[in-house]
Amino acid sequence: CRRTRGQSPWMSKKRVHLYRWILPLCCHGGGFLTSVWLFPNVGNQAPETSENEVWRKDGDKVDLAEQSLLNKIIRRSLVRNRNQVEVLQRDPSSPLYSVKTFEELRLKPELLKGVYNMGFNRPSRIQENALPMMLAQPPQNLIAQSQSGTGKTAAFSLAMLSHVNTANKWTQCLCIVPTYELALQIGQVIEQMGKFCPDVKMAYAIRGNRMERGTKLQEQIVIGTPGTVLDWCTKYRHIDPKKISMFVLDEADVMIATQGHRDQSIRIHRMLTKDCQMLLFSATFEDSVWRFAEQVVPDPNIIRLKREEETLDTIKQFYVLCKEKEDKFTALCDLYGCLTIAQAMIFCHTRKMASWLTTNLIKEGHQVALLSGEMTVEQRAAVIERYRNGKEKVLVTTNVCSRGIDVEQVSLVVNFDLPMDMDGNADNETYLHRIGRTGRFGKRGFAVNMVDSKHSMDIINQIEMHFNRRIKKLDMSNLDEIEFLQS
Ligand SMILES: *[C@@H]1O[C@H](CO)[C@@H](O)[C@H](O)[C@H]1NC(C)=O
Image 1 (cartoon, rainbow, N blue to C red):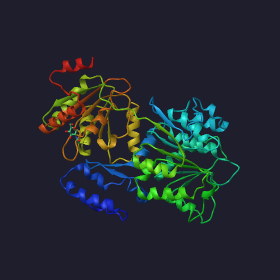
Image 2 (cartoon, helix red, strand yellow):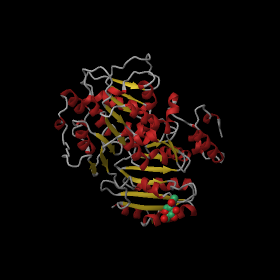
Image 3 (cartoon, rainbow, N blue to C red):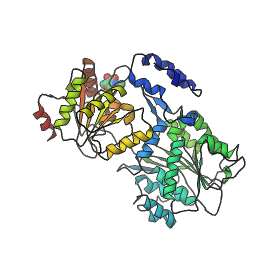
Image 4 (cartoon, rainbow, N blue to C red):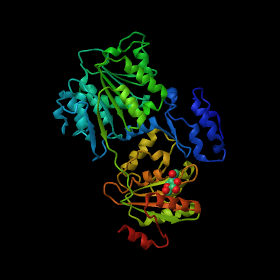
């Protein structure tokens, strides 16, 4: 057990508490707990991001801001989505406009060129409704909720670029996001989309960007983190908040997970004028996000994209009885050998197990990618990209890494270790989440669970009971049966 890494000066009270709580567990030799000591990519941004973490019951952490960043990186293009869009208009009597083409928006030609140049041929589901609202005159406020990859960033980037009056050399559009890295991601989209609009300028209000106090920014668009933006509006007076006519708050759910960001956002918002157009985006919409959104966005139009339901209906579920991990490994190889598999995802409980399994699969000659918590966001994005493009057919991962990854062609999910909570009960929700990624878009999927003890058999029984679906025993000595299953 090494303690030194956790003791940086900015460690919050909350973390100290968790640290104490997790320490005894760590001493039992669980390799996966090393995540506690690693804070990738924090640099001097640490105080802004350190509280943005959700601790899972399995002792690994989910960093919300990192997750959003990962999603933004891997979702450069839009995901297929046929889900229902719900629109709630502030004034239900006014006609509801939606567009099927970008031409209908009457954008400046150079901006339209930028949009097409990025490979967007037509508006996404959410953009069909959101764009006319965001571009309407007089301006309308909007709260929009949809998962990553549905076109939110492109939508508000387009709105900001279109809104700017290039004759005015002051900041008119202000966009705040929870982290430095997210700001850079959005900045890249704006740069690409505004490639043919040379008169539109953009600046980053992020820590480390310094100017002399009192210097007024000439850039029309500013993207930044709440702390720095607040300083630039008040202490340094680089931005006159009274001249901001479009305010965008992105990743609201991540933002409010940090108390400091939440308060700073509200303070920035209070400095804006009543006529400023407010746009708020979030991937999820719990009550807390909703209350915050209502505080920041008066008289909003609301757009929500319904989530795709996860279901076990199109998935055949099995379990295999094994003795220990070597036995599980053999079963996995046999299984893989006799199924025609597009792509497989294999879940392990700990990083240690995941890397052991990966090493051994590679030794057997399989092309395997490992997605692990100690990788940086960029490394993880690269692994996911390669897997998506079919360069590797097998992805080994722990639970925490796999969140938010949709790969359409996964046809086999293997629970090398079954999902369970701290008390050793079946983690039904995680099971659904893992398995639900196969058998999508009308395709059939297989899920195979490795059972190596009476306890894991209990878990299988709990899962069966919870979903009221049978999980059949697979006899590995009868390969004909397996082949038959696939036909
Ligand atoms: C999962 O479902 C089973 C059966 O309904 C239940 O016994 C078990 O407690 C559930 N697990 C959790 C973590 O709630």
